[in-house]
Length: 337
Ligand SMILES: [Fe+2]
Image (cartoon, rainbow, N blue to C red; front, side, top):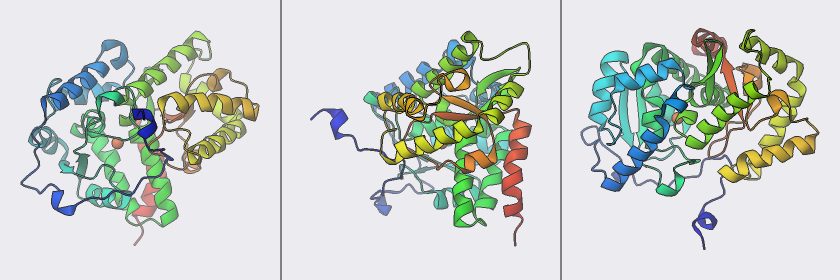
């Protein structure tokens, strides 16, 4: 049997994990003696992304935060290092967990205490390009540079107060809003699309694919850079909403059948979906990832899918707009008695 055949089929649902509570890290015991191979994997992942031709497509706030976090490209950081660089700046704290994917209820209980959990699991060598399961490289390299910064702490601060008061149905929407902002969001910077989400930054295949899409949109002159790019994206979204919703429903169906869980399958099956639906592969529908403006109603329509490729990314016009759109859904819930 090959390694591929042994891999589970990821359907987007989180598998039950058998966790031995006695293995969980205590407050006093947060550090791990990593093997030299684990440090080497970290170094290859770090340098794989930390390249000028990739970093130029990532938003400036990430790069500022990465400098503030002062990570060693060759060594997995200690929790003490992370906390020394994060807590004095934003009041957030990092805690290690043996849980590989923390369920949302526990996740947001920690968030309410301004605790960001990082898993103790690091991907293996055969998952350097793409891992459907977020690992500690994702948690640390993808998210934590931002947690040195007030604007990000403010965004993260919004979720728990709403989640803890939300109905079950609203909780599903809140998870999706987090997914398509802090995990897979884009933001405009100098009239260009820039990558913001930790899931894209920490996943070389998704990062490369997003960047290739930026190039394609330019090459195919989908974008007129002499005008306001975000407005053009918005116009496309408003005029093609029906098609976009059909694609989203089709992608949801592919997820349910476990067909979005590998790099090979992910975008290839989406391409054939366009054919099945009769949606022409041109303009913003012509590449490997669909871009659309961050829109609460549309995001609420997509089940949050983990363990899978994301064929659609949402773009905010600015972080102020992201703030306002998240507040529009989260604040009324947070204010309930
Ligand atoms: Fe994440």
